[in-house]
Amino acid sequence: MRLLQYHFNGDLAFRKFGDDNLPEYAILSHTWAIDNEEEVSYEDVKAGISKSKAGYKKIQFCADKAASDSLQYFWVDTCCIDKTNNNELSTAINSMFRWYQQASRCYVYLTDVYVGDGVIDAQAFPIAWEDAFRRSAWFSRGWTLQELLAPATVKFYSANGKYLGNKISLEQEIYEITGIPAKALRNHRLEEFSIDDRISWAEKRRTTVKEDKAYCLLGIFGIFMPLIYGEGEENAIRRLRKEIEGRSRRPHNFDVAGVHNASSMFRKFSLTA
Image 1 (spheres, one colour):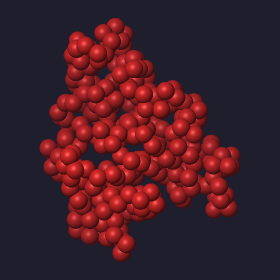
Image 2 (cartoon, one colour):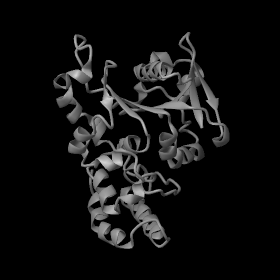
Image 3 (cartoon, helix red, strand yellow):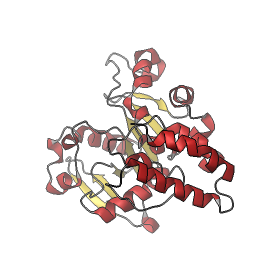
Image 4 (cartoon, rainbow, N blue to C red):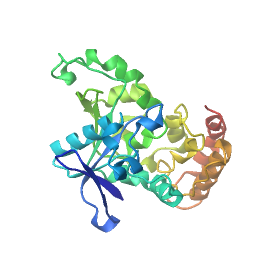
């Protein structure tokens, strides 16, 4: 796993770790800019030009929060994966649920939620931000589902860095927005929830790349499979369904009835834009 280390002079450096010597680290959850060129890429960090991008603000935010939690390392999806390397990208996507799960802290940076500077304690004045929180695009994206469910500690922040609460203190609001029950937010094993339930959490979510509608669910169902960008959304969903059905035949995994009951939901899900 490739982590970022932030130096006090503002420089960023990559550090690679194996599973057997992985340090404690923080992880960022966010929505990508409409123009991906505004995000800091792996190449930007290597070239030392990350500060020139608008997306550097998110990295600075994550670095500052990690430091305040005494964490030296952190991970950001825009730049910690070399996306020009197909093998690395496939490995990263198949590992991503586990990476979020192992993170000591997950910081959610809500670019479309702003709290006035006059509000010192945002938690005490939810009226200042709750409506924007409920409408945030973060709750509509495919990849952020696992970023909500996998980590033990998920902390929400406004675009100007105001702390709004964590996924436990905000579990009622999150349930009302997403339909995800408190039990799931409290890190119960996802296998305890039916396949129908887990699909329902995702069916209204969107991804920019069509195939990602399936790939973003790999960790939700404990599935590992190769990525084939270009295969199309329906083929990707079909492969995911086949893997889930295969798992259902093994003991202590998926309920067989649940797989068959979910088939119609999969069909509807695969057609969702």
